[in-house]
Length: 385
Image 1 (cartoon, rainbow, N blue to C red):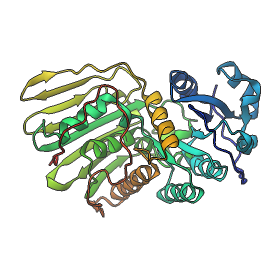
Image 2: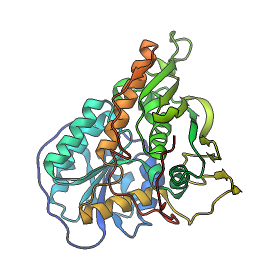
Image 3: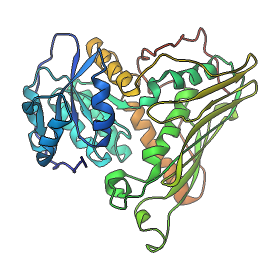
């Protein structure tokens, strides 16, 4: 099923909280991610369940065929506000093109539904900030779906860094690429996507660097490549084909990242310290991640319990809804990445370093840490630089 863009309408409604155990989710958008990953993942959850799907009117029948739902649980976009009457639905998961995130987050908030929104949170920093404000005013939780901040593999890298097992960290590098070969893809449309590979796959590198260090960058510098002639490559007339950016952190820590829509699939993440290094390769795919840690104790490839990234993030949000806790990756975490991506594009346009107003402290945009399978929480935290 190829997801079609929903009509952009809005209205106001309210909802009732459900008092029992598992949290009911309505997933908005039934494209490939929902079909291949989210529906199977939520069926494995003991914290949440799929209560409804929202899709285009012409795709309702097909959505019913690939889901465990009743026909009356499949809604068209124009019927979105009918979810207000569903007391068994406490959370809405937005899985739509980036430019539509703000509208549907705000509509869900007006119905009193908590919102899990796919990354990037929006297509501009202004939209992202407005979404956070709307959810705050409505008294609902907003969580950015940064699945890699919920996996044992990524937490093992973070813990090794923050326990000091790698010694003072000096360098991080990350590469994420794949070939986007559909010239009609919405991800190649500036208005719908807000950029090219940076907000799509480069964001994994950007967000994971910040997550692993627990700090915010002091400056960014970047360069991008985009064909100037339509005959060179008609896919990239609106967005960049490739981008490279560097982040500078306190203590002289440097992070170099590259992303491309025109290079064969690669997704890697490395941290280099004075006493050791960590390597994730692959780093960002949905499963079969591979971590190698090299420390003074030698080289190891940790074993982790089996897990599903999407189940873990949906479970965490469900737990936060029940407890009222701030999610680990709230809307504010998504807003910060939008600010940083805007600065990266500014640096690329102007050909100069862009200084940032970096907040002091650790994990300043994050909330309650998630439960991570197989993780032993660090006894102490040290600065990585």
